[in-house]
Amino acid sequence: MAPPGPAGALPTSAEPLSRSIFRKFLLMLCSLLTSLYVFYCLAERCQTLSGPVVGLSGGGEEAGAPGRGVLAGGPRELAVWPAAAQRKPLLQLQQWRRRRPPAPRANGEEAAWEEESPGLAGGPGGSGAGSSVAEAPQGTLALLLDEGSKQLPQAIIIGVKKGGTRALLEFLRLHPDVRALGSEPHFFDRCYERGLAWYRDLMPRTLDGQITMEKTPSYFVTREAPARISAMSKD
Ligand SMILES: Nc1ncnc2c1ncn2[C@@H]1O[C@H](COP(=O)(O)OS(=O)(=O)O)[C@@H](OP(=O)(O)O)[C@H]1O
Image (cartoon, rainbow, N blue to C red; front, side, top):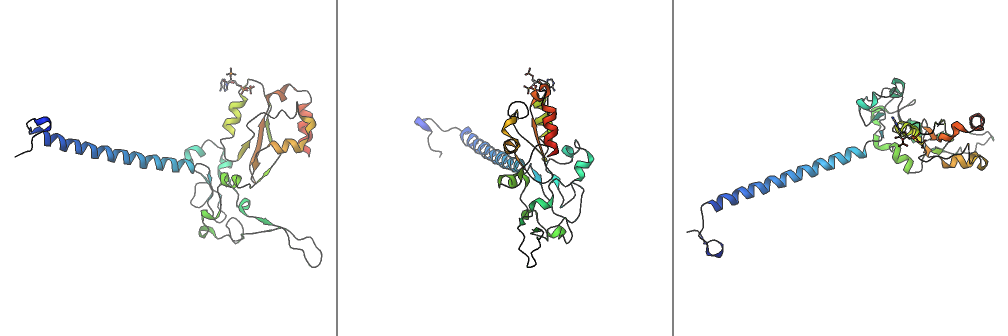
């Protein structure tokens, strides 16, 4: 005989049925939540890999091939960049090689700087598929680790004001090989007397092959700006 229900109510035959349905519902809900969590974790992991991924292989130039420099965004994103940019390994292997100062030579000659990790692929004697991605930090990681150096800009968006210069810069800097200053430095119009060293110091660090950019729309209406920019590019 079934035990009496709460408050002395008589047990009904519907109770065990609804309880089992509730249990099933609970089980389904738990599985759904678990799958959502797993999906979320995977999505987050994909996002963290969205920077340039360096694959190491001997002499290959084509992006997207196994073991070569690829954009994690996949071929659809690569398609918007010129073919030359796609062919170029996004991060050159040389940038991962630490340079070490030359050991003084007995005959007093100035020794050439030697590169460590000569076994890495990309040059003579590269180990090709034997090298692992783990040997080389990713681009963003390398920059976080204080790699690279500050350079004067190789490209400047000069204006015009309200001409969509911000949008242009933001689109350009989506490319992993473009590093841009977020703010407007106003060097060639307002801060020229501070000198090129000050200007360079504002710039983000770049690795070999990356382009430094800035935008200041008022350069377009500054009489001195063209000559000053030209003088900088001669240095
Ligand atoms: N594609 C496109 N089409 C039309 N309008 C656009 C586009 N991209 C940017 N914008 C508008 O451009 C304005 C910002 O321009 P700038 O980034 O050059 O501004 S600034 O000079 O640096 O202050 C800003 O307009 P306002 O909001 O009126 O200032 C943007 O909305």
